[in-house]
Amino acid sequence: MTWLTVLQFANYLIPLLIIPYIVRVLGVEIFGKVTYAQNIISYFTLTINFGFDYSATREIAINKADKSARERIFWSVLKQKSILLLLSSAGLLILYFTFSRVNDDFTLYLFVFLMNVGVVLFPTWFFQGMEEMGKMATCNVLIKGGGLILTLFLVKSSADYLAYPLLTSLAYIIFGAGAIIYVIKHYHIQYTKSDKTVDKNIFSKSLPIFLNNLFVSGYTIANLTMLGFYVSNKNLGYYSGAFKIIMAILMLTSTPINMSMYPTISRKFAKSKQIGISYFKKSMFNLTLISILISLVTFIASPVLVRLLLGKEFESSLDLLRIFSILPFLVIMASLFTVQGLYGAGLQKYAPWIGAILGLLCIIFNMIFIPVFGVYGAAWGWVISEFIEIILAGSLFYRGIKSE
Image (tube, rainbow, N blue to C red):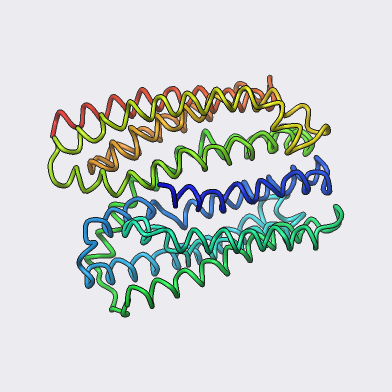
């Protein structure tokens, strides 16, 4: 968990450290435009990951001592992610011809999209399953730190806004290439022919998780997407500023907890339902206290965070960040029931139903609230949806455990 926190520090906090510089150099409007491009491309990233970070992690964790099985899983996931990258590239071309925002600034969207090459290469799921993240976390910190320094030197004015996403994407590609070479050499991964049984097994287990993640995007990244149809780039910039701060907090807290606990709880549920439930209950009390504390600190520190990270030009982001401050508690608890509960116990078949209901509800909330309340409507739509996720995921987890 400590090493994963270091990894998330590199992935999210280091890019956040450059925000005070970037927002002041680019200004609210261009910052909003760049963030909107990152938002659109995140749908392709979601597609390429396809739930492998959980399904493949579980398979690697269970087959940790079986070298032959690990090799088949490794090449199967890499092949499927590569295919999804090609399909996503075709999707980007379709947007070029159908969506004016992409057509008007295609180079920006292309530079952001290049990050997905690194997403394909970097085997996060393999390291999670093997529970060995130390070296990769250290390497990630060095590379992202290098990207930060290059950004400081190369992005000097709003005219250099294309260099910002390009440097970020190059960091992902370099790190991904280095990571996959390390895995192949360190773990002696030998190439194996395509195994249709393994492919089908991983795909079928990933599909429910992908569908759930896709539906969940309806109340996270889709909020910003829908805002693009109703508000100006300036308002997008205000929302994006608060969004990036809260996402960094969530990634530094919720994600390390999920990643570190998931392989362990998967093995415990694989041993017996009783062992898994016991571990789950012990974790629940501690996570509740931790998540409440994080939300309180975020709320109290909101003025300081906005002033230091975004500057006076982003004063309108303060109220948004205060609304978002309850999310660490909500997201950690929702993830506890969804990731550790449903996924860990092998009950991922329920996940798409949760995501479908929440995604639909959030889209309805956005259609009602955003035209009236603008960015605040999108923020409250996200918060309400997380409340509902806790209720749904908790109910289905306990029902699924009882029935099995």
